[in-house]
Image 1 (cartoon, rainbow, N blue to C red):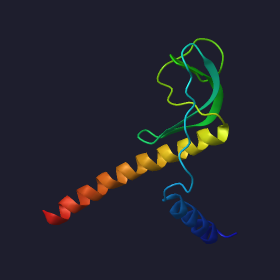
Image 2: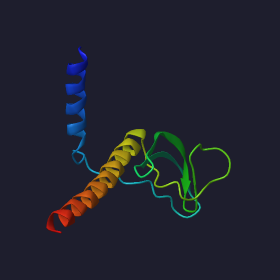
Image 3: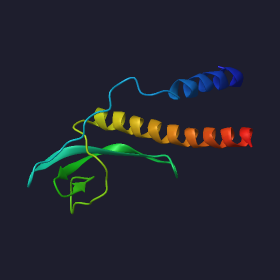
Length: 115
């Protein structure tokens, strides 16, 4: 494949990514009081772009543990029943964060055009 053809394929891939996911956002795992469950955790922050492969850990009603070992943490986000669910949730989160940033840019463009 030539560089020009590869650039075109890359453009098509990016354009296809600029859409809402074609699947429902998965539900997270919810642990009951004093219950610890296995859960998949992933990160998809767009601000200072950070993404990680989902990892299998544990979740309880009070904390999460991304590695499934050691002390639990808070603030890891939601845990999901399967790795696929975690990846789908990451896709939803990334799409939402990108859409918010695009909406902010669109608003600035609109303000500039009417100024």
